[in-house]
Length: 246
Image (cartoon, rainbow, N blue to C red; front, side, top):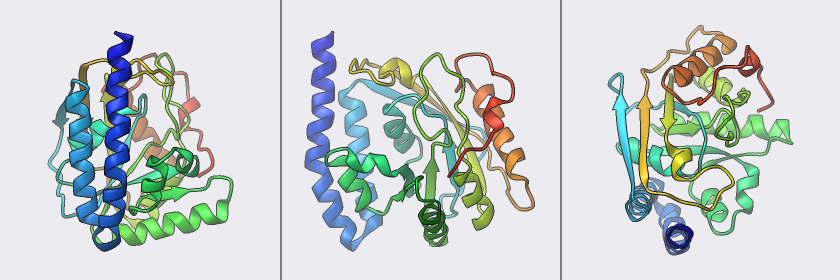
C-alpha cells in the first residue's frame, strides 16, 4: 500500500516536472491557454491516483463573470479537485509566497499569472490584491483558501485571513463559498500516503458583496463550509471570525 502511494505521488511529481515548463512557455503568449493545460494536468493526476471528484452546485454560475471562490483546505488534492469541479472557469490562485519555494511548482505558479502574496510585507500584499482586482476585471476568477494553510483532519476551520474578503469588497465581485469533503482521506495534511477515493465539492450560491460587512461575509462563508461538512469537528465558539493579516 505504501509502495502504491509512493508510485502515485511519483507520477504527480513527474507529470508536474514535464507540464510546468510547457505551461510557463505558453503563458508568455496566452495565460488562458496555459490554464487549459493545467486543467488537463489536474485531471490526469486525479485519474492516475484513482480519485473521483463529485460536484454539486447549489446555484447556476456564469463563467463569463468573475467570482471570488473561497474553499476550505485539508489536502494538496483540494487544488486538483477544485480545478476539476469548475472546468468552465479561468481560475487564478491567491497563494502565499512560501509556495514559491516548492521546486518547479512554485516557479510555474509565479510565471503563469497566479497571485502571490507576501504576508510579511503589508504594502506589497495590498498592492498584489489591487493587481488581482484589475485581473478580475478582464473576466478572470480567483480561488482563495481563506484559512491560509491546510488544517489538520481533527481541526475546525482555521481563522480566516481577511485579504480575500477585502479583495471581493474592493473589486465588487461576489464570493462563492465552497466546501470540499473527503480530500483528507485521499491525502491527509503532511502525509505521503495517497489513497484512491471520492472527493465531494459543494459549490454554493454567489454571495453579493455590495454594501456588505467584512465580518458578516466571513461568518456567511464559514457557516456554509460547516453546514456542508468542510469542518470535521464541532465549531469552537467564535474563533473563526477573528480576521488575521492578509
